[in-house]
Image 1 (cartoon, rainbow, N blue to C red):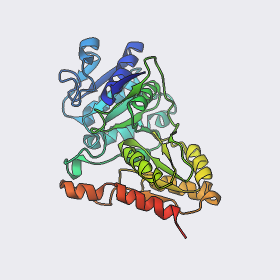
Image 2 (image 1 turned 120 degrees about the vertical axis):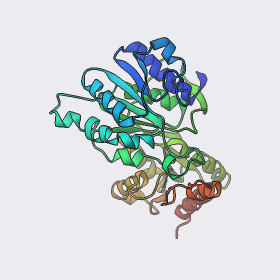
Image 3 (image 1 turned 60 degrees about the horizontal axis):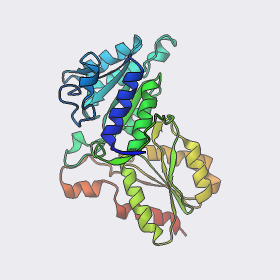
Image 4 (image 1 turned 90 degrees about the vertical axis):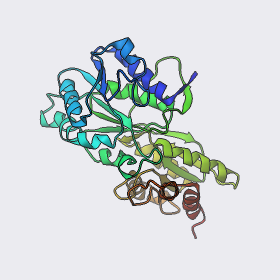
Length: 326
């Protein structure tokens, strides 16, 4: 094993797949000459040249459309958005072209394409640059949606996404690019659609994904000192969701809290809660609780940011309300 940054894990995944398959190429804003806005693609232009690492204009709809056309004609593009907030402009190509092409063409055209970039809040960037898009894209049939929470998961899942024949939405985080973690020296793949039990426990199942899962580990350590044993499940893939891993955990712990960074309405936590109420109802000793961002546009003020995001206090209250429900 070696210890590398999250951004380096992504770079290794892309570079390894580009060496393996000449149909893979990278395009996006500042990915070439500038080495990527967050230095994810650093050095790739030197190795692969300007025909395979391509700087684009600031025109998300345009270069996403170019990538969709390329994928329909035998290539495997990786599209980097500087942030998923900017990809709203490209939603027509992602949702109406890439996601639907296989079905609309009667199976004649697939879109093996990865759309990737920074997702969620990254500090004082205010409402239009701090949104989490997991539920937004998971709502769309034809897309696969991934949000890895460690360098290990990021590399293994991105390699699988690049090889997949369906369009994949790959959601990273600006706040995680510098995170370090262990990654194998040898090649490995992580299958899409498989959650992971990241921490064993017996009293309550805590389901999460993406960078907010760090809060889950922080709270689990605090509550361990009070004799409460938390099992943490990292979904990793948001579409398709690995429901069976969550259900099997809840059958053991009999309680569940779902933690996510985004808004509560029509959220991933809503979907998990609904599924458990139907497929694990007889095992639940308390209703499923959700801890999400407040149902408001994101603020610029640090004080309001702290109030809007899930925090230690809110998560502990949700867990204890499940544990000590009368």
